[in-house]
Length: 91
Image 1 (tube, rainbow, N blue to C red):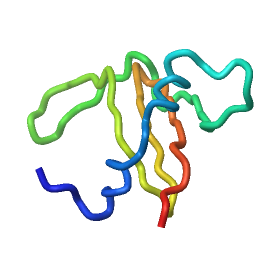
Image 2: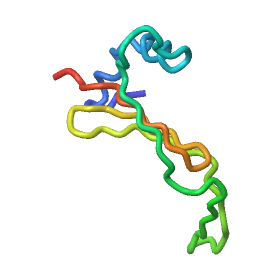
Image 3: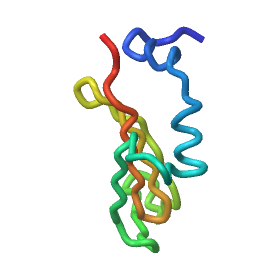
């Protein structure tokens, strides 16, 4: 699989520190990865698809967001968003 040019730096990052942070926390140090937790929509939200004329739920969704030089990961589970900053990409 070809790596898109704008994401090549992501393949070179050592993800072990953020894995440890997410799994075990960072009790003895200041927070290295800023986190935002917020409610995006109600837990039991139901939407309607105009094309298929069906109702549906979205129990989870996720995305990588590139804003300027900073990359974020957003995970929404039952309407609660967990947004974590990976930091600034190298130039």
